[in-house]
Image 1 (tube, rainbow, N blue to C red):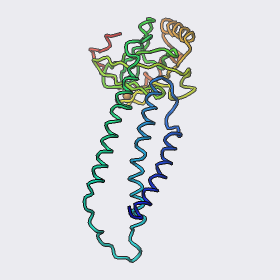
Image 2 (image 1 turned 180 degrees about the vertical axis):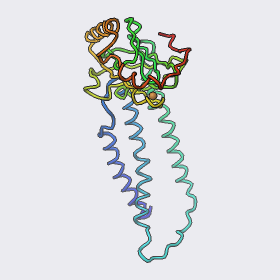
Image 3 (image 1 turned 60 degrees about the vertical axis):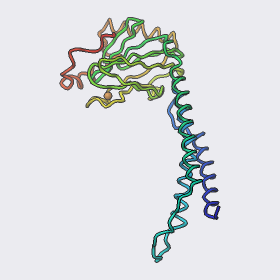
Image 4 (image 1 turned 90 degrees about the vertical axis):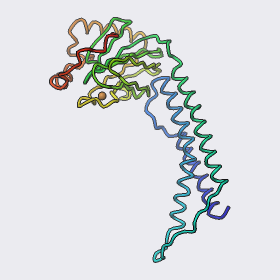
Length: 283
Ligand SMILES: [Cu+2]
């Protein structure tokens, strides 16, 4: 290895050490609100750790080359000597990339999917969410509770929850940043999403505890937001009772269960053509 090669190798090692330190210590992600979020974050960190040496190798060559081999002032530029093939290097590069690519198929790929699906079929609570331009309708079939134009949902902490998600009109997407989980709401289909929340909290504590539509669905798209309240089981039962009383009693006025004021502005004229054959039969 010539002198330039040695310098690039040293540069690579130093940049990799710094990069790995940042990858392992920096907090890139928002609050971890669910078991699934921990799985996703672990996958993110692993991919980052694997990507750092590849990126620093390219960057080390790149920066060293443009500094070391740049033309001096007044020097006439000319073509460099031709670079001939280097079989050993090519084989090393292809083999290294192949091993990396195959490895990430298994970890975090298949391993992560298996972890995310661990609670499949073992749900302790079902929540139905229906997207409509531009709001959410929510039902808790186990508790005989339904409300439209929802501004909040509640989940009991440490409980496996299955969301049954659908749409009345166009594609929407149910996304809770604190849970790292997202699922499309598709007209005519029910898609499912499993989440086990692990942290008590709500939108006022951390804005990542919210359902946010993540599929551009029209002018009201950014308004499709609901607060997510993760409660202790007893508090959750109280919340359910209160919600039922509100829904049955005062027609959901003046409380933040439902967003009459939002819907008044947004859905009055603009969502005139709601599809007649709604796909919400599952409710
Ligand atoms: Cu949307």
